[in-house]
Amino acid sequence: MEIGLVSCTKAKEDSASTPRELYEPSALFRKARRYVEENHDVWYVLSAKYNVLDPDGSPIEPYDETLNNAGVEERREWSRAIVGQLRERDLLAEGNTLVIHAGKAYYEELLPLLHEEPVDVEIPTEGLRMGETLSWYNERI
Image (cartoon, rainbow, N blue to C red; front, top):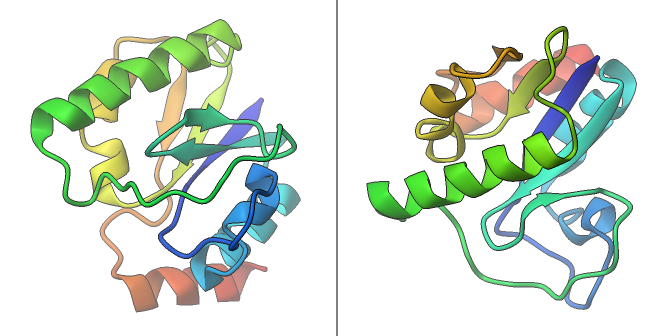
């Protein structure tokens, strides 16, 4: 099973919304969302505040947290929580592939933990800058 993991974004709706809708003001999120919906079996949001979110989960209030300026230890703690939640959902099983659609701050500390699991990991936009990432999605959706 291919599982898309899309990071949260700074741009958010002004009121409580489902995770699928909360980040819609972001062009990057809209493109990544469309891509994962068309190309992966299931997908989840990687939230700096709430960790792993089901896109159709309960509405959440907008928030102003990011991992982009977080220290290494904070990102490690967040990554441990992510792995725990992925494990609880049985998403780290052998034969599954996690496809991460996120910036380096969201996967740098996560990768070493995932490499200890039987799941495969792909980062299709790794190393691309923002404009290049948007172009990557534009070419594929």
